[in-house]
Image 1 (cartoon, rainbow, N blue to C red):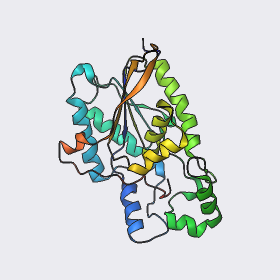
Image 2 (cartoon, one colour):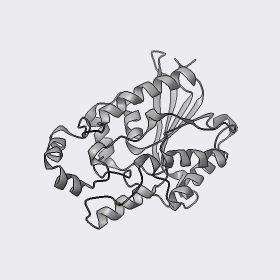
Image 3 (cartoon, rainbow, N blue to C red):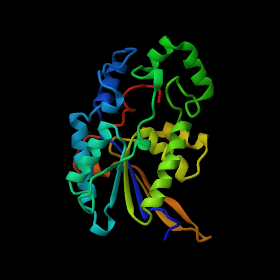
Image 4 (cartoon, rainbow, N blue to C red):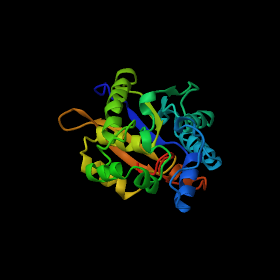
Amino acid sequence: MRQRWPEKLWIVRHGQSAGNVARDAAHAAGLHQIDIATRDVDVPLSDLGHVQARALGRWFAALPDAGKPEILLSSPYVRARQTAQAICEQGGLIDARPPIVDERLREREFGIFDRLTTAGIQDKYPELAEHRALLGKFYHRAPGGESWADVILRLRGALDTISLHHADRRVLIVCHQVVVLCLRYILEEMDEAKVLAIDREAEFINCGVCEYDFEPDDAKLCVPKLVRYNFAAPLSQEDAPITSAPDAMVAAR
């Protein structure tokens, strides 16, 4: 028993969404608002996102049976559930059990910043934009929304549930860019500066893979070991285009 950790943990971001596309278009046009009519939770994958999700599923399917995921956990957002379903349909799990939806894996909630570009936030809420710049996005919470610290708080509970119910199993999580980073923050015991530095280095790509093994350290305590991060081979092997735009409904993550 590995102190109730999984045997292996993969954390992947959903495929490109229709919201990613709408956000890019809004930025390119210098608009203040992202033109998309649905709630963030209902934003689906784009056509390209479906291609990426199937490619990721085939990559997992090609792993030996002893190394495939056994449990798949998904954010409840449509784009994440569609990605999870594609992984299952391509044979990416050791058996045919359906994904487990966990609302704690959802995207960060943006509150009144929802659908606004950076320019839109600065124009509509200049005082909040100034406060956010002063406080930093790790702790700043838009009215009605969440800070990164808020996301981390709920993810600690999700990891506790994984340790309780899925110890010594191979677990795959399908979620969102900020959620991937916040899970790294918890698993690697980072501080604010470290996780934001990783965020600045590069966007986490759509259907990118973050992977952990769990092995005993010198004190015989099981610790997470980062095997790879922002891994793009599942897409590159099938010539599926690689995209990395921030998630849909707000520019200022």
